[in-house]
Length: 319
Image (cartoon, rainbow, N blue to C red; front, side):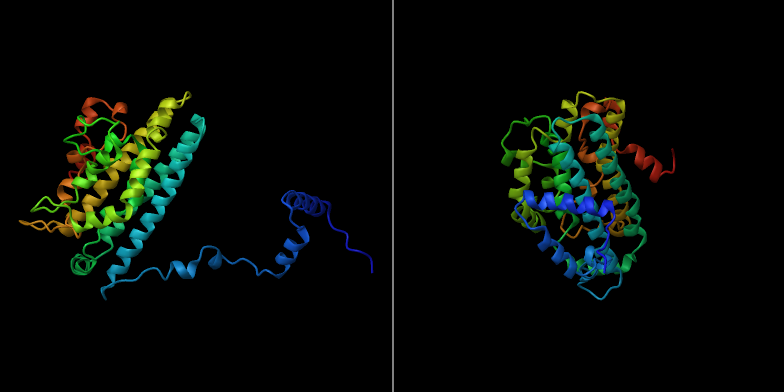
């Protein structure tokens, strides 16, 4: 029986593998034996589909609660994609405009998906079901999404995330603890009646506070704004992508939340408090907090009317 004649491209790849494993002190034949015994990869195993589909654990019998859970899980996966792209920008040294633009385009695309998909929240659930099953979620809140806080910290200097009342007074050089305690979201999670920290905020700080403070410290010099300043090739195209990111994160995304909150929580004459006790009426609308990642890229009029264009279009139907 004549020996098998392998194609040249197969032999070339075997030689390349031999060199690869030899360089690391490994025996190629052992790996080939492992490959011989290994099962074929399947789609469901690769993405851990069975595990993924088992992660929805409603706390009530209301059918629409599963929608609520799945949508928030999808949101967190998009946040992870955004963080992945922002970290690549932050770690690129030196940063070049082409790489910067490509990653920001991805970030903006992910935000577009998030913003448009929020209709699932305000169209996809019955109000009566939501108002009942939400009471079983106390004191949890979407406020507790640490990944979104990471996105904000990666995006800009921490001073831009301070509560609006002290934003111009506190210096960027302030200690990380002082900065953290005065971030706008900290002020949005206090008891409406007493001004004390809600349980929602206390548990959030306990789990993520130290990690977020480390992020603030680690990205003081290489957050997205600092990378933009250091990019010697920046042009109008990159500036426009930065502005788009700013608007999507700080206007369109929170107002998509606000639109949903109004549908489910607005009740004349008394508004229903959010599950975490947060003041959503003051926390979500951009015109109150005016969180702007890159104020240097906007005119005074644009900053003054931050979020107004969305309201005019979505609420009043005007362009």
